[in-house]
Image (cartoon, rainbow, N blue to C red; front, side, top):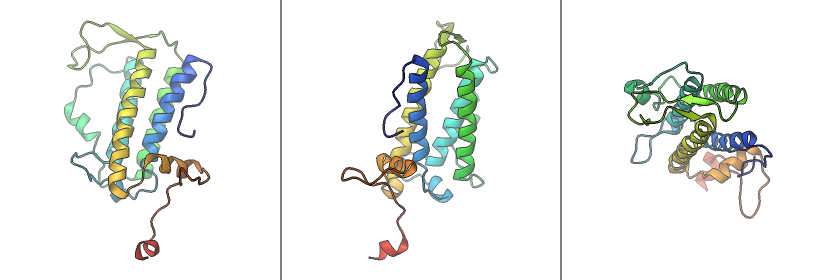
Length: 196
């Protein structure tokens, strides 16, 4: 999916296309990283590429549970913070597998409902409005696009701070694009090339 969401003829396909574009960008930030690099926090914040992917997994699961009315407020602050931590026992492969599983569950939920489906707003959550009874599924999907894009951008900055790899070059490497004068697919730096 080179740099843009695919063309779509329905609103649902358009929404899911943009959501998947941002999901792929977030995952591309981890492409070629070691587990130690995925745990690195090279910027002024404590964000890591691995931690951001874990948080996005948590976000997908949480919103799917809200849509299905399986969860209420979800205001466990410690669980929220833990969702950003890439632990010593975590691996890039496992974190991406978990994210992919959460994505499939979200997509299965979204595909089965009308975009005008009412999603009750959990009450007692400081960042949710008290004067709104429900959002539409459409609003929730747009929120997922927004949240995923925000954190994909964070992952871009963290990744670029680790080894200089930019999102376009990473996407080109992930998707196997041919090199052009404008964009060269990312390649890992080898010890031999560092010595020259």
